[in-house]
Length: 458
Image 1 (cartoon, rainbow, N blue to C red):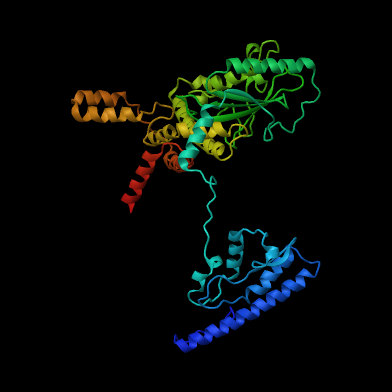
Image 2 (cartoon, rainbow, N blue to C red):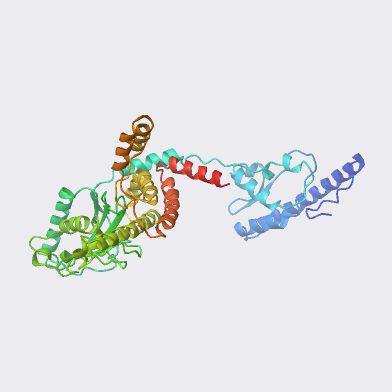
């Protein structure tokens, strides 16, 4: 007898087949009698339940045997908490409903690794694999992209939310505040909703008026272009007598002298750095809107290297300019890492903005990476695809003077660049390509080039 209770299969003659059929029939009858006896015993006891059903199935799993070639009209017996045991031919159990797909799969699992006679699997429906079709469970890529685009297009520049569970100051109580404090916060909201500049988005909390979250899109012409930079702010109970508290989501990276890896925002307006009287917080005039505009204009600028106190004196020296270019190279790499950080862990209430922004700007960011890896300065204008095509056409059919003019218009190549810049950016490019592709960005050009390079290398 094998593991399933069948006699060894030897030969293929009709005599042995008849013997096997007789043995199978006898074994089947014995198994049926045992099951009926168990059902009767189970009906008379109080231990009917899911555990009884499982044990019954486990005990009988190895004993079930089938008559070779017989159809599927045999009786099946079930145990249920409310109904007990029923034969499917029994009139009393005719109203019992059970999903045949679930039960068939349950029984099929019992017969994994069993040595069944040839043909049995094909004749027993619950030994066949069942494909479940669940309408609406999965969305196509085009549907996902359409949904991302729709949410991004309707994303408001200013809006209120219920709360911020992941806010940096969520667990910091503001304490007891005066009525004037609440009125001032509402005034701040009104200013933000009306006067927010482009590339800044803000969310405030209805349940926690002291909390605010803002994101800035890095300006073009800077090493921060197309990046997303998140800030959490809290209005203390003493506001506006004292400035708000502001925390930068750095991801452990310091990409600006004013933005520390620990999240500190170093700004005279916030009282975190010294400055002239006109640069400091003024309770009568200073606002949260002013803080955000200052960070956008003064911090995320073209040459952040000179934000470091005392470095501005070297702004016109060759050494200072070379240092600023090196700093921009590092800053752009940190900005790319920050993009990955935001894509993989988007801050609460900004998930739609993150997905939509990188879906829209992913192609331009990848093009910038390629452009900088070719040797151009970080922050310089990246030619659009249409401009590249026009230059190629002009070069093929124009005079040498026009070609020379085209070459003069191209940005100068970056000399004496750190040797690690290109390999590091290549790694970041591959990670960004994968993430942008998931978000539905137009990455076909770069994927095709990658495939071409792999084929050439092979």
